Figure 1 (tube, one colour):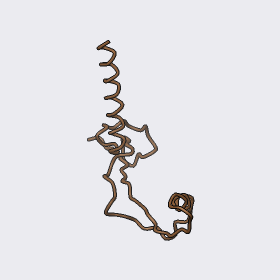
Figure 2: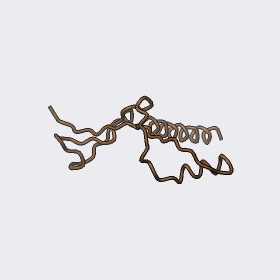
Figure 3: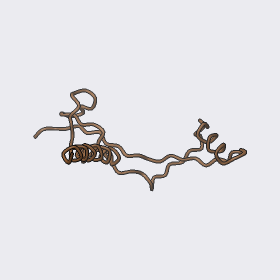
Figure 4: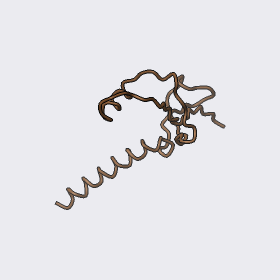
Length: 101
């Protein structure tokens, strides 16, 4: 029976809560985004995303060694699947629009 090495991951939200002195909320948001310090970060484990496949290779412990295999799109991250389906639907819509003309 063949062996396959897969790499899976999930998104884990990391957040921080800080107070910024600013003239407006818009400026406070700018300061928060520009702030590079994350020493007080927290993980939001309860809001983590679904597990998805990020790579697949044939063989035992073959990650990044062998040829990267193409795996079915149903194992992609949900946002990637939605993007792919949107592109397909948009293409079909363009075809149908031109067919009507």
